[in-house]
Image 1 (cartoon, chains in turn red, brown):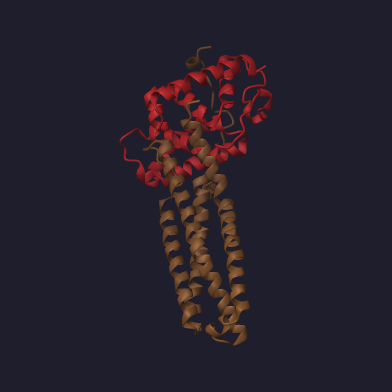
Image 2 (cartoon, helix red, strand yellow; image 1 turned 90 degrees about the horizontal axis):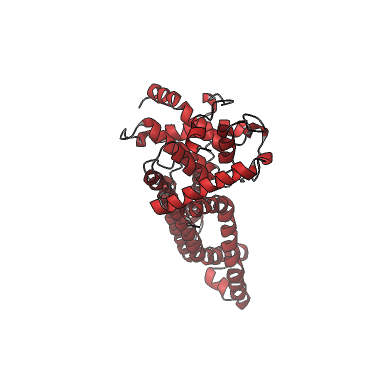
Length: 159
Length: 200
């Protein structure tokens, strides 16, 4: 893949990058840094992309790998009050389910975010388990817990 | 709340930063990039220090001290080889074709093995370096041969004392330096592996 094709593919996948980065970054600077890191990592490893899967699928996994590792030590916010202004893209009091879910996911731990994001983007449990390197049973348990956690945050954490 | 419906309605685009292509540089901030950088510094300084030994061999007349220098030189070359191999093996990009845990485990294992090797080779070479450094200093300042210098009981006791005190000190110093360079990143990755694989 030459530079032109690479830029074309990256631009086509900006939506994926923006979505994943917005869930992991806590402020504008971090969002910019994470985006640039993902593009850099993609460029460095483009040789390993064999074309067996869609470029967007390959990039999705690479971006998640990068974000999980980059945000491994980050704090987990316990309440919406602890989110920075930048992390509240809508308003301090979310109006609809989409806003509530967005804030709830932002309050999860790094790997929990990856699990729920892949699940909501339509990946099957065995695909997510294979991506992470854990058993499907373990993944199913984790996914159930993440959903419970989101439910709990939605009912308690946002108040 | 229906999670799938809510998910579809999230707008991720507001305030997405523009990509500044000029700032996309080699300054990667991932833990593996940082550790690869630390390994490259270690390699650089290892080579610089090792290059001093052949120069020493030219200026040293005493054959017994030359043997010591050669031994330390061989150990250093062995470590440089292992460090270079590690440098080539660390991949800062986690290959999306493999699973996350396998990749992270592999990278953590090779780095920990190299740290252990550094410490083991150090434990063998510190007493040799201390002994021959002591002898080199002694014969240079006293103008005696090695055997004449070693004839004095006080010299033997001092040499033994230097080995007993300096070997653990060097070991602890190197361990501290390796901790400063790698421990934080390694621990972070190990905690991540644990959080992904844990069934609790």
